Amino acid sequence: METKKRFKLYKSGKKWCCVALTTTAAIIGIATSHQSANADVSNASNATEQSTIVNSNNTDTTVNNENTENVNQNDNNSTSQTNEYVLKTQDSFKTSTTTNYALFTTDFSSNEDNNSNAETNSEPVKNGWYDENGQKVYYQDGKTQAGQDYVYVQSMDNANTKNWYMIKDGVALSGLQKWFGTYYYFNPTTYLKETNSYVNVKWDNGDVTPYMFDNTGAIVQGLYQQDGTYYYYDPSTYLRVKHDYVPVHWSNGDTTWYMFGDDGKIVTGLYQWFGTYYYFNPSTYVKVTNDYIPVHWSNGDTTWYMFNDTGSIVTGLYKWYGTYYYFDPSTYVKVTNDYIPVHWSNGDTTWYMFDDTGAIVTGLKEWYGSLYYFDPSTYVKVTNDIVYANGNVYWANETGALQKAANSNQAFLYSIKKAAQDGWRQYGVLPSVTAAQAIIESAWGRSGLATKGHNLFGIKGSYNGQSITMRTAEYGSGGYYYINDAFRKYPSNYESVVDHGRFLAQNSRYRNLLWDTNYASVTAKLQQDGYATAPTYASTLNNTIQAYGLDSWDREVIG
Image 1: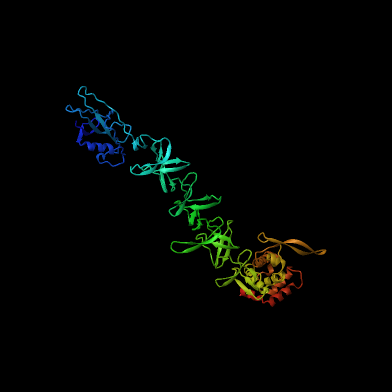
Image 2: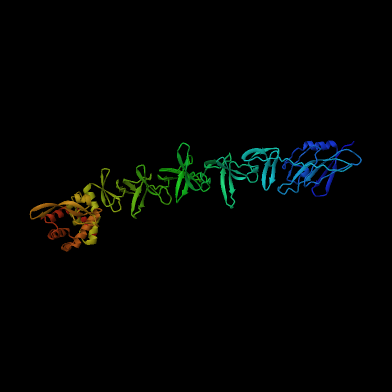
C-alpha cells in the first residue's frame, strides 16, 4: 500500500491557486516545526499579510470550518490514506481587523461503498499580540488576562524579544494612565512607557497639555533636575511653572523660594519681574536681598547693583550699613562724587552730596574747587550761615561755598554783608547802619533769638508763618516786667537782615532815613524817630561802623 501526501494553497470561496506535491518527509517537517507563529514574525510566503497563526495537529484530524471547503479525496485503485494540509485565508473573520493565516491538518478517508465524509473542526490557539477592533490584544494559550497590570511579555514589533506593557483585560493601554496613585504615559504608537521625557498629552477635546515623566515613568511634581538645570512642576496640576516665584517645601520642613523663567528653567542672575529687577545667586538659585553685588555681563563687563530687603533692585535714596546711598532711577547704578536732587513723594526736592564711595556726605567736602559743608543731621548743604568745622569758622554763602573767617565775629559779618547791601538796593536802608544794628542787637549773632531763629533785630510777630516764643522784658508804669512773646523766625541771617530793611521802609516814621547815603545822618534819624530810647544809641552805632570799617560796604553799592 502506498502512502501519498499533497498540499493545496487556496483562498476560501476562490478557485485553486496552486498545488504542490512533495514527499512524506517534507510533510512531517512542516507539521512538527510550525507549532505557533506570531503576526510580527517575518514569513516569506505570507509577506503581504499582517499576522500569521500556524497550528499543527495529528494527521487523523479532519478540518471542518464554516468558511473552509470540505475536501475528500478517493483513490479507486488504492486503499492508501492521503493527508491533505490546507493553508487558508480567513476572510470571513469580520470581528477582527487582522488577516490571519491558519494551517490545518485534514484527514481524508477512502470508502468505495458510500463515499462518506468525516469532518472534524479545529480552532487555532491564539498566542501573542492581535489587532482587534483597533486595539492591541495579548493572548496566552488562547486566553486574555483579567484585570490591569504592568507585565513583561513578547514585544509587539519582535516576537523574539520582550518588553513591558500596561495591559487591562488583555488590551494594551496607551496615553495617560493612572496606576498606584500616580500617572504614567504610554506611547500611542509603541504602547511603551515614556521615561525621562516631556510629553504633549492630547485630550479628547483637542487640547494639548505637556507633562514631564521621570526615569521611572511617573509624572513629575515639584522640583526636578533635567538637562543640567531645574524645573518646577505644580503638585496639583503637574504643569511646568513658568515666569513665577514659588516656594519649594523640603522633607525636613524647610521652605525655599525659587524663580522660574519664561522657559520654565530655574533663574540665575538678573531677572525682570513685575516691572523691576531681581538677582538670583548662580550657585544657590536663591534671591539676593539687602546686598550690593556685581552682575557679570556676557561682554565681560561688570556692574554693581543694590537689592533691598524684598530683593528688588534699588532706585533712589537707600540706607545701608548706617549711611545713605543714591541709585540712579534710570540705570540703577550707584551715584558717586556728585550732588544730585532727591524727589520725595510729597513733591519736595532735596539736594544731597555723595562721595567717591557713594556714601552721603556730612561735614566739609571739597567739590569743583570750592569747600562746602553738609549738616551731619540733615545731610543738607549749609547756605547763608556761619559754619564751625574742624576748629575753624566759615561763612557759607548763598551757594554754600565756604569763606574762612579769622574768628566768629568776622564770620558773622560775612553772614550779613550781602543781605545788608541787598537791603539798600531794595529799600534804601544804608548797609553800614544795618550791619551796626545787627551787631549790637544780636550780640554778634549769639543772642537767643539769633541762634534759635536767626532773628537779629528782635522784630516781633511771624515770618512766613514761622515764629519763636521767647521771654522778654517790658517796661511799664511799675517798672520792668517779663512776658513770653512771639518773635519772627527766619531761615537764615540773610532773610532777617532783608526783612529789617522792609520793616523800616514800611513804617512811615522811618521814611526820612531812606536813601540817605551818610551813615551819621541815618543813625541820628533812627534815634530821633524813636527806634531806640537810649540816649547813646546813635553814637554807639557810629562807633561800631568806624571800628569795623562798615562804611566800605556803603561805597561798594553807592559807587
